[in-house]
Image 1 (cartoon, one colour):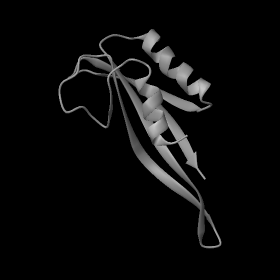
Image 2: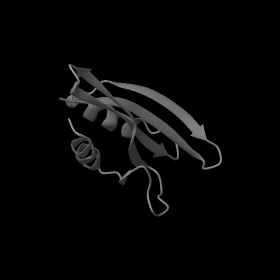
Image 3: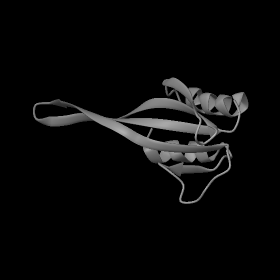
Image 4: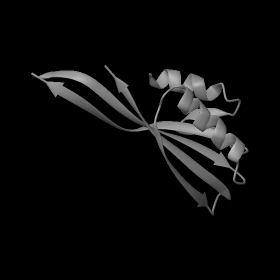
Amino acid sequence: MTLAEVAQKLKALDYPVAYSHFKSVQVPPFICYLVVDGDTFSADDTVISESTYVDIELYTANKDLVAEKKIKDMLKENELPWSYDEIFIKDEGVFKCTFSIKLINT
């Protein structure tokens, strides 16, 4: 799956979605996604495959199990394993739930 396909799948969840950040203030819930790292696998001086590490961040005013489930279901349906982390951003008054995935492009 490509980054563009991930973006399309996230937009289908019916939440505002942006790469990295929005240009205007958003009311939660909303989703941001961004590339946080990349890696390549090489052999014989040739890149065989490329990996892209992507964080999908769900911002909510309150713990939102429904929104989290929508993201988890989308990831499961597309066979994208994830790791999960959650923090409360006190200054913003929002929860940030991060789903970290790895995209492999061959």
